[in-house]
Structures are given as C-alpha cells and as structure tokens.
Image (cartoon, rainbow, N blue to C red; front, side):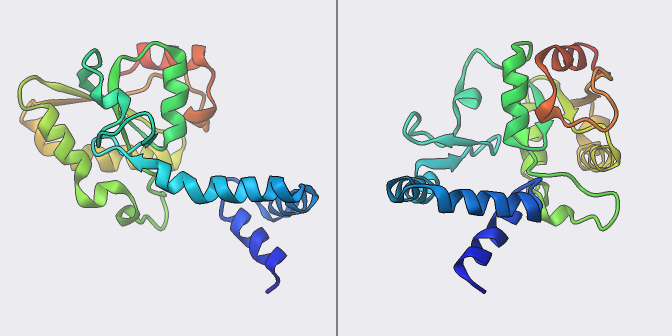
Length: 206
C-alpha cells in the first residue's frame, strides 16, 4: 500500500468521513506547502501530549491551561454537582455550553450502543466509571442524571442501558433519571443542534 493510500485509510477512520471525502483530504495535503505539512504534522504529534482526559467526566482538555486531573467544568465550584448530563462525545458538551442554559456537570460516554451488534465494552461504562461517579455525586444529595443522547434507535438503546446500569441507585432514591425534551427532532445529533433547540430540550426534559 502506498503512503497516499495509507493516508486515505487513516482519514476514513474519522467519524462521518467516507472514501470520497478521505481522498479529498489526502489530495488537499498534497497541495500544501512543505512548511504547512510540517506544521500539520507537528500539531498532530503534539496534541496528545498537550491534551488529557478529565478524571471525572472524561472529556479532553488542554494541560497547558489546567495542570490538574479534572477539567475546568468539573473543577468549577459554581457548577451544580447534582445535575449530571451524560452525552456521547466532547462535541455535545461544546454545543450545550454554547446554549448557556445548563449549569451542571457532564459525563462523556464515548459513543453509543448500537441496537444491533451492541458492544458496550467499547464504552467507558465497561469499567463502571459512570456508576461510580453517580454513586459519589449522590452520597449527600439526590442526583439528577440527564440522558442526552441522539433521538434515534442507537441513542434510545444506550439510554436503556444506562438506566439499567443505575437501577440500584434509582431504587435507593439517590438518583433520578431524566431525558432531554423533544425539542430535538427525531434522528438529530445533539452536537449539531442549534442553541435554541438545546435550550428547549433541557428546559423540557422529562
């Protein structure tokens, strides 16, 4: 396999990128000046060392702006620690933060569980970190866990799985589970929803 084909294959692994788009990316790299290619390579090489995963919510954050093990949201004393919004990826958090309506904390699941060929072991829930965090947050005061998944079969399947994971805490009345309201249209991805839609979904959660 040529170097170009290997580059195309790597681009294909990116979320939402097909063969045609991967080839466009690869051809674009060929049009860049040598210094631009070097800069791109340096950025890719350094992003791993400059970025780490939050010990609590598992979103990625820059170590240059924060030397601790938790991100700025989890470490913020003004956030409501008794509202935990579970989302699919980091992009969902950025979309919600832009809406300016949510003041709680997050947990990034890292994906959804497909309705068919489910592989929940690929997600962070495999090591029960979500359950452990919910248990920790609900020790003193009842915790609301908000499920913020896409309104599609895979998202609904993931919601059911998380509900089963937290069933003991719900039965102990330490956790209350809610879902984003139907301000989100069926089949929509939270990451791409506009601010007003997200506001509606949060305010009308059930």
